Image 1 (tube, rainbow, N blue to C red):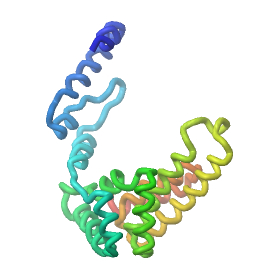
Image 2: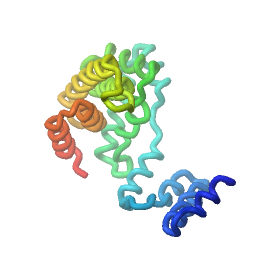
Image 3: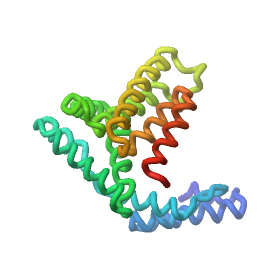
Image 4: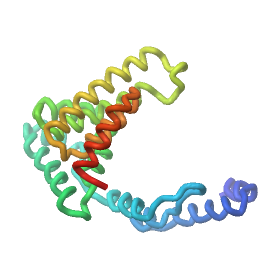
Length: 219
């Protein structure tokens, strides 16, 4: 608190009001209400419909990574498949659950950890033709490629880091393309593929993936 007052005292009235509104919204106890009422930052306007959709997806409950691993260890990949097929079905049949498949993937597999790698590798070994498994591993590879690249400028990034990024990104693109070919409704694969294509500057792949995804699930 002692740091916030001096900051506000040096702000313009416009920024001071915006800062006050942001701090006030953080005190709202209910997570969904807090999400809905969180104000747009200065100079940025968030569309109300986008905010409502985003906050709705944050409330979705989904299977946890440990549960997926337990099912795979028990040699029950069909049970994992059933869970994600259910999310896919809900995404296209229930407006209130639209986005549940993408949200579950982002929270489960868009993480470059060894735990996630272990799960997705087990899943693909158990179900090599599963679009859900391939999309999960492709999502992991995309994030791992980003982690290998780092956040520094290219001229300050070691050559071996860039090479590792390209190797992992190529794996991501291969898995994600296969996932979409097997099941075009696996929507999280499109987003991950766009990120993977962007990392290597493949504008044509970005454009084709955007159009393909929108054809399956229009905004």
